[in-house]
Length: 229
Image (cartoon, rainbow, N blue to C red; front, side):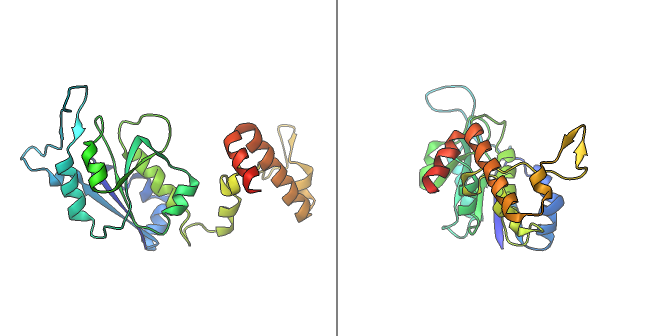
């Protein structure tokens, strides 16, 4: 069973959106599990202090290495499990990365303040990961993104597993346009090919649409697609 262990200063935020819909159903069916660790439980003083000012000056506060290391060491028994620190400096999180951690229990550190003491990253083999080129007020939202992405890839979570292979980012292509009833809406018709019943024509049309959308909107993916074609 795939397990996501989240280290946070705000455990009350979880499970949040992960406690409803297909995520909750999968949790109830024991297809995955969620463990939430309050970093403040490893603080050493009565005020549960976890941060301090940076050496050399500067704005903001940093999460202390001694507090975070205590929390990690007490709660991670398998030292081979990946530890992810959500950071705008990190490796880009994408569909490929999600598939790489699909078969590994993961530990996610939700950062706050101005970051963490740099020494903790190397001593605990922590990988910095970013969900995009923007700044969030905390890592919890990023943790939701990563967990959501991986959970839906787990066997048995989606009702139709075949849909996974037709989604955006599989084979470095964005997904083709989709249509449903009514066939005519506000003077706009569903493309004729989708009503022909000719599965080969439909498949070819969808591939052409995916290629065109990817080429126009994501030249980076288009380049990868052509290299692997």
